Length: 355
Image (cartoon, rainbow, N blue to C red; front, top):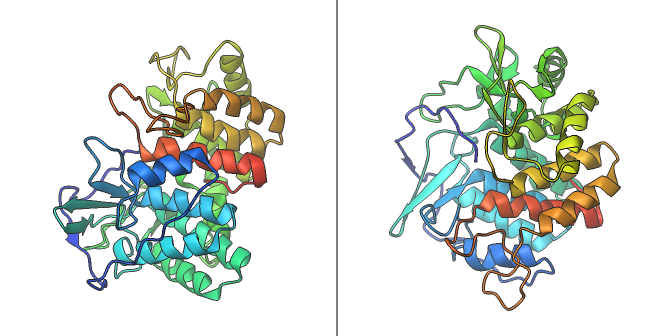
């Protein structure tokens, strides 16, 4: 779902700082059909969440565990959260206290990418900090602070976050993807480096092109960049960030609402013509739209979007894939396309945390 410009992308590190024993995976019954699908088809015996069940079934993303942690804290499920944190520390947490963005399994060996992704580290800091409050557990605060200190020390350039850090060399990228600016996570980070204020200012000064937000910012040349083909997942994430910082998004909102009222929202649009560039919809787009609309206090519209989103879910309770957002004909699915709808569904029922 998310493309990273990675240093030494083909290289992997063997896991360090881990014992040879895998944390025990507990069995849980869920009231959410989509979570049951995730646990049945994507969760391994080690407790890791597969990216999919076809060509990437041996790949596990920090994005996935971060989204699941947010769901568990949102649902106030303390035991499951603690179990996933054990798994996170065992597999994803590098000795640098940054988070490897991807694991890959070959046979019994699981290796970790030597690169992090700012948004994934930030999301986990957010989940840990929220869990410390919800569960009154100070060890989560301490772990969040360790990751936060490493991230704000190593993952910053000229007072701004950067997309990634090479965990072996500490070399950083030069680009900041605007959707990475998780306001809730930034609030939990040290204020001494002004990351929060700098991030807000970066969004305030970002140009629009029609209804569309810039995709990224190049730190060295101080320029904003747009993709020629607009990905609505990116757009909705950026719109959420604007709303989190109490910045205006009305032009984008009008465009989104118009598209939906015409029948559907496509996954991609042409930057100049504003016409659809593809002929498909996206579960993740609609799930993110729910969070965006909730941030705008438009719960009724969010509920309408949720009804449409659920039409993509396998609703036949007799199906092996019940609850999943999956194309049964070819088994095409993605952890992101299941975890985001799961988090949105839980958020509409019980209050929400931003992904």
